[in-house]
Length: 131
Image (tube, rainbow, N blue to C red; front, side):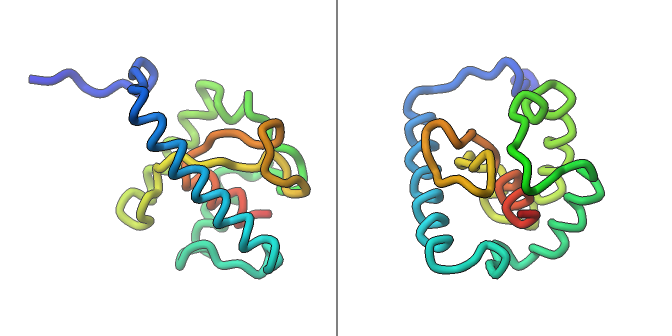
């Protein structure tokens, strides 16, 4: 019988990391190309944008969409647990809900090595919808 999966102690396989990186870069390039043509406030990222936004506001009431993301807080033990619970709600509702993606730390910046963090797709959706 296999042991339960513990995300805190999981090893990363190099090929899997490369595949995630390729998908994440494809996603960011597509999103940025759209943002260059359409204001973010006019975008619909999913069919559930309104529900995601309301849920996000309930779970993260102190989130300021204009402020830079505090990655340390987001990825702290408490932050991870809160986000895991949020993300889990979309397991059967949003395809690729837990895929890795690249998230801009601030809404006023372009994608760059110093202005982005790695996040889950639902974190990306929630934060970009709020912005």
